[in-house]
Structures are given as structure tokens and as C-alpha cells.
Image (cartoon, rainbow, N blue to C red; front, side, top):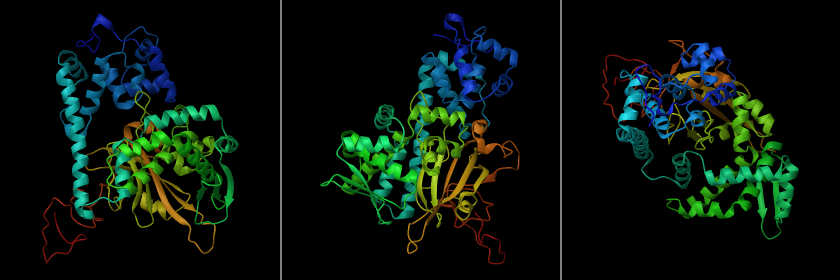
Length: 470
């Protein structure tokens, strides 16, 4: 079993040489050797030696890769100790361990000499994160009255699945490869399955399938990318009917309506994977530095569809940059949400009012960027854009909402929207919380109500912006 000596060099029974794979990671990130060396904390000449396989990877370099390229690290994970080291390093980077830094060589020795202990530590940290999420669900469930509606059950099912469904994702990727690109390919595939596509003039009905006649009517009011998504949804619902039904039936949902909603959601998931096949989309996202406008044009999808797809890039061994994604309506309600980062959204009600996504709702077609910091000290680069969906009729108001996408500041170099932000500035980040009921900040002027776990003190002789102290 390989280990690590006191000079950060792997002990020699099987040293890890991965120059070509490290070079591929650097190039995918669009970095020159100088920039990559700075990111890894080594000299350019030392990086060159590693890339030419003159030197092995060290624990210090592995630690830096785990921090800056955690989902690329799978490409060079040659053995179980390396995977264990990366997972332990990621766990120790949790803010709960702030102030108790462990040197890379010390961690490497623990991983090598006490693998069972390291595995239990990693599992314990994962259980802690799950418990934190469950506690938040319980607290917000009490606020909402206790029970979850079918819509909320389905939303939480996708969250607990990591917003990634491997069977459907790989099946859609394979189907996309056979079909080729363009609406014509989708229409032909539907025709082969006995479905004829027509136009529906009712702006209130976006899609209607007449099973008896084999006729799919799509609203003429929809923009081209939305009509294309409707075609993909119907094709996915037919092509993957059996796995969708099996997943929905086996899900721990309380009602038939929730299972039907999950089946619709799974068909939508497969449709997104069909229009944006995993490996092609992941590669393009990295090449474009997650520029949504470039991605939407490249794949002929909508801005929201491209954002949502980025949040699903969770395939084991080929993950994308971890992103959070949400959609917020004019009233501040979060109607879609998922996070592959440490940031978690409130399950009921709205998000923190200091978050720019609320302002973006009122300013359509303008991209707003923001650096935010959550109470645990983690910083995120956030992008938000207001969108308007035309109704197709003067008698019906258009739908207005905003979508937000972001990543942890550690990935700022891979996120084009961070270019205009001083990510490292001491006062640059806006302090936000999850929701007022869960936020511990005592000095927030935007607080709507106190946190659920704190008592308040009221002084009738003093009136501050918030009329109580925590």
C-alpha cells in the first residue's frame, strides 16, 4: 500500500505518476502552467516535472487538487488510498473544522496507517451533513404545518437522489447518440413510435397528448427551445416508460399523485439529458467556463434549461463543478432548487432577501453577479437572471421569475461570472442566510423574524431597525 513520507513524497512501493492526466485537467480548466502551478502551490518547473512523469504526485499536490478540482480527481485516482485521502481532505475542509487545520503529510499518514479510522471519519462526516439537512427539514416542516404536499415530496426525492438519475441519464445519452441533432430527429423518432406532432393554439395548454389518435399538440405560443423540450419530454416518456414507472413505484412517496408527479419529473429529467447529453455537455461547460448563453446557443436550449442541467452533472467518476441552482418567482418563493454544494436552500418560503436573485426578478434579461457568504464562512459566486415567458395572449399575464446559479468561490476560475468579482476581498461578500428562521446572524437589518432556536429580548425604550435583540 502506498504511503507518504515527511517531505510529501509517496513512499515507493507504488508511487503515483499521473503527468498526462494532470495535464488534461489543467487544459480542461483553460489554465497555463504558471496559473496551474500557482493554484497547486508549487513552482512551474516542479509542475512541469510532474506532467512529464519525472516526479510523482505528492500529498500536498493531491490536497490542492482535492480542494480546487475535486471532481476531476477521479481521473487520477489510481488506488483506494488516493480516493480515501481525497475524501478525507474534502471532509476536513468543512467549516465545522475551521481552526483545526491538518497538514497534508499528517493526513496522508493517517490514511495510510489507519484506513479503517479514516473510512469511519469520512462516513461520520457524511452522516453529520445528512443530519444537518434533516434537522433543517424538520424545522421547516414545523413551520409549514408538518405534512409535505405531493409537490414537496417529489422535490425532496430529487434532492435526496443528488439530482442525478444514472439509469435515465445514460439511457438518454445513448439515445441522443443514435438520433443525432435537431427537431427533425426528435419528430422522426416520435413518428416511429406512432406519434404525430401538431400545433395547439390554446396558450394555456403547453402540451397535450391524444393517446387514441397518437397526436401530440404543442402550444404555438412557446419559443423554439421550449417546443423542442416538449418533443424531448414526450420521446423520453415513451422510450423510458418502464424504468420511469419502476423508479416511481419504488419511491417512498405517500400518494398516487406524488408518484405521478415524480414520473413527470423523471421524464423532464430524461428530456434534459437527451437534449444535453452528459459528456458533451460537461465538456462544453468546462470549455465555455459555464457561460450559460454560450451553452444555450450551442445546445439550442433555454437559459433555464442550461442552468438546470449544470446542477445534474453528478455522475460518479465524471462529476462537473458542483453547482447550486434555483428558480424564484415574483413573490420570492423558491419553485425549483438543488444544490451540489454545501449551500442548502430553505424548503418552505423564500430565500434570504439580501441575495440578488430577488432583485433579478424585477430586471429581466440582465445578468447580476454577487459574492455571498453563508454563516458557516463559505463563500459562493452567484449569478442571477430575470426571465419572462410570454403567455401568447393579451388576456394572460406573462410569467416572470429569476434563475440563479453558483458555485463555491474555490471554483471561481472555472465560472465566467466570477471575472468581475473580487473573490478574495475581505469586505466583498454579502452575508446571507438560508432563511430568517434558520439564520443565526444577530446584526441583519433585513431580518423578517427571529431564528427558531433563539430567544428574543425587547426593550420598550429603544427602537432599532429590527425591534428586538437575539
